[in-house]
Amino acid sequence: MLLHPNRIWESAPDEDLPEVFTRAFKNGQFLEIYFKVKEPVECYSSSMTADGGRAWEESCVEVFVKALDNSEDYLNFEFTSRGYCFAARGKNRWQRKELLASQYSRILRSANEIINDGKYVSWNLHVSIPSFILGKNSTLDGVEIFGNLYKCADKSRRPHYLSLFPICTPKPDFHQPRFFKKLA
Image (cartoon, rainbow, N blue to C red; front, side):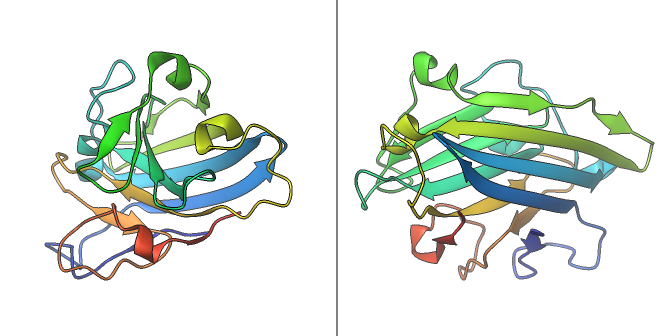
């Protein structure tokens, strides 16, 4: 699957933007997501050194999903190129609760070496989110997972916003569960 830019949100829509290929699937008690990113150097930034920071400000990929135990809640998982994460759960952007350190530690992440060739920065990330964090204490077999996948970097030299499924808002806003579709 390929993430697409929302050209309405881009300040310079003709500029080179990141390419993001992704794959989402269920594997027993995990939601698995692979990201393969190639982005212009101007789009890349990286400074986080621990979970819980402002991942969306630097080069990150994001997984937003409907909670499996309460259809009014959704979860957002925002991962930097190095695998650091910010994650929260709630009904909307303003009514959210960040995950606990014990929950962060259960999210499996594997980031490869970041390659910068002077023009592009390439990186891959594989994340495995356990079902209990999504609201189900057993296998995900037979469960439909609805959400959206994103790429952004709000504070890079060239901010950008890409999504798997379109978001119809005038300004960048990934906190839009009404635009979620089936991921896995």
